[in-house]
Amino acid sequence: MEDFEKVSYSPVGRCIYCGGTENLGREHIIPYALGSIAVLPKASCKRCAKITGGFEQEVLRGPMWPVRVIRKLKSRTKHKDAAKTEPLMVVKDGKEQTIELPLEEYPILLPFPIFSPPAITFSSEYTNGIRLIGQATISFGPNPEDVLRKFGASQIKITPRKSYPVSFARMLAKITYSYAFAEGAINALEGDSVVLPSILGERDEIGLWVGMVDKSIKSSKGLLHRLVLIEDRKQNLLIAEVQLFADSQTPNYCVILGKLK
Image (tube, rainbow, N blue to C red; front, side, top):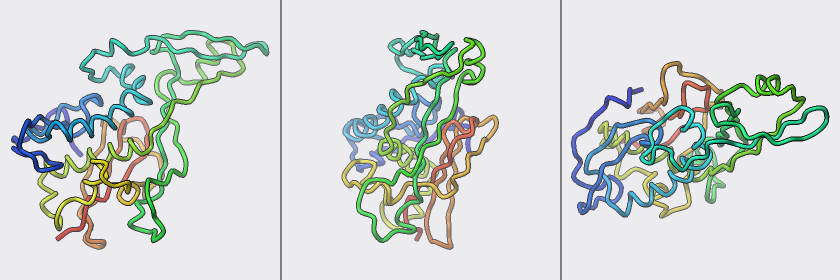
């Protein structure tokens, strides 16, 4: 568990994903757009940065964008192209009407995927992708019940936001892998981390390594994001736990990073 606003690391001098040494940029452990400034300097080549940035953007400028705006999280564009209002369908006196609400007054519902446990731990029938078994919808902004009362409505209808479960899982893998690299925990592994091919899109097997063991929804007060590394000597695995928006009762995810020496 870290205060990711205050952590700094030494330059790496090679890409932590492919090992390249040309055109290196800094790598944010938790994405900059999620409020973290903890970086690994000279740690990601342009090719790998384009790959990781691609799946991160699907999530960060997709379902998570409104939450980032209302929580005033970092944005290189200052959220200039973000929507300022959202349409809300309300049912009042049996009639439907659409109201344009300022984003800060809108009852934002952010979907978090509920995954099965990492397939490597339980399934011999795994083929590809990741198994989505449900969804936890977390409310940000005003309580929907308060919005109902404000407009004297009997019902409100909120259009579900598109979810990107594979991109989300790859982002979790990227966050935990870069954190393990920064902390030196990756050196405890036999060979390279098992999640690297999935992060880089070389193999469609993210569900082998990413999932959920504990499906309870918890809150970590005062902590925007929660990130923990565990050396599980019983299973002989390096495991990471990651919880985004941990102060808002969100799911806790598990990433298997590799086999311990």
